[in-house]
Length: 447
RNA sequence: GCGGCAUUGGUGAAGUGGUUAACACGCUGGUUUGUGGCACCAGUAUGCAAGGGUUCGAUUCCCUUAUGCCGCCCCA
Image 1 (cartoon, chains in turn cyan, purple):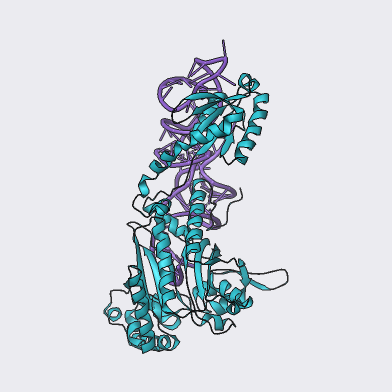
Image 2 (cartoon, rainbow, N blue to C red):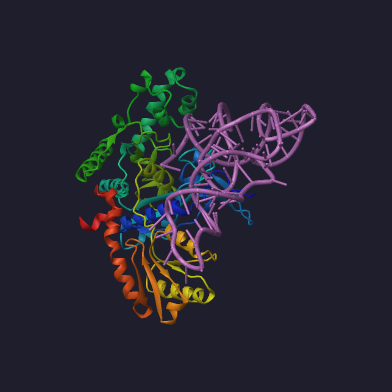
C-alpha cells in the first residue's frame, strides 16, 4: 500500500466540513475588515526564505523542503506565508497602488521538515494577514483584534493574548548585546540548549522551559527597559488601542518570535485549554518594518500574523465546540425498477437545478436498504417513486420529521417541497442551541 | 536532530509461543411477495504495519524499517 508522506493529512468527511466552515468564517471576517485575498506560489526561490526569514533560524537552516527543479534552480516549499506576500508586494509594485496601506490575507499550506507530533505536521495550513504601508500602531491593534475576533466568532473561549515589543532595530540590537553580556558570566548555570542559544539566538533564552525558574532568568534585563523613547511610546499606543477595542491581553516580556524579521510589536495567541498539547500557540505575528527593504523593496512597514488551522481545530475539538454544519439533505429519491430509476435521475437533476440538496440510490439496494440510507443521510424528505403513481404523474413523499406521507402531483412538487422544508427552519434553530452564547456566527445577524 | 510508547477486519478493540483471532459497532441479506430508524436470525480478518531472525511452530520473543502518539529542540 502506498501511504501518505510522514506528517501529512487527508482531510475528508466531517473533518473536511469543519475546514470548509472555518475557511468560510475567515473569508467573511476578512471581508468585513476589508482585507483582500492573495494567493502566492507554494514554492519560491530558496533565496527568498533565506533573506526573508533569516539564515540562522532553524526553520530555514534545517526545516525547509528544498529541491532543484529541472532547470537547476534552487526552490523551496514555503515554510511560512509572509515572505511570499512581501515578495509579491515588491514584484507587483503594490506600494504604488492608489489605495494604501495594502491589506491582504492568505490561506494555504506551508511545509516544514519536522518530526510530527500533536499540532505539528509537515504540511500545515495557515491563514494570516499582512498590512503593508502603515507604521501606525492602530494597525498593530487591528491585526491582533482581527485574530482574536475570528477565534471568538468560532466560539473558542480558552485563548490568551500575549504581547511584547522588541523595539526598533536600534533598541533590539542594543538589548541583544546587553542580554549576551548579562548571560555570559552565568553560562554554566544554563541548560545545554541555552548555551547554544546564547550564540545563535539569545532572545530565545528567555523563553526556555528548563531554566525558567532560575534566579538568573528572573533578574534578566527586559526588552521594555531597553526601548528608546519612540519605541516605548509606540508600544503604549498599541496597548491603548487594544484597550479601546476591549481585547484582553497580557504583556509578556519573554515573548520573542523565532523569525528574524520581527521588530516592535510581537504577539502570540495561545490556547489555554486543559490537556491541550505542548504546541498551544494558535497564532502569532508582529511587526516587520525592515523586511520589505531587506528583500529589495522600498522601505515599507509591515505587520501581520499567521494562524495554524490544524491547531485551531484541535482547540475547537478540545473545547467540544460543535460548528454549525448542516448534515441534512432535503430529499432522498427512492426507486426499485429501471423505469423508476430513469425518472429518479431526471427528478434529481430537476430538483438540484431548483436549489434543493438531493441524493438518490446508486447501488441497487432493496427498498428497505434505501430507507436506511436515506435516514443515515439525514434526509428531511423521502421521495418514493412508484410506477403506478408515475403513470398519473405523481410521486409519494414522506416527511421524515412528521412521518406523514402524501401523494403529490409532479407539477406541484417544487411548491410542495418548499412548503414542507420551511417547517425545518425551526429545526435549524433548535440545532443551534449550543451556540446561543453569542459567539456563534449563525446568530450574528440577529444581534 | 534526540528520547519514550505504540501499530490486530470498514470502525472501536480483546487476546495467545501451537487445532476455527473474542466482543461490540457498522455493513449486506432475511423475518416483512415495495416503507427505514426497534427486535430477532444469518453472513462479514487464510490474517494481527512491512521485512528479516529465533523456534518443530509466532500475530504473540528479538532485530531493522515505516508510520502514528507523547515529550525535547525549534516553531504557527
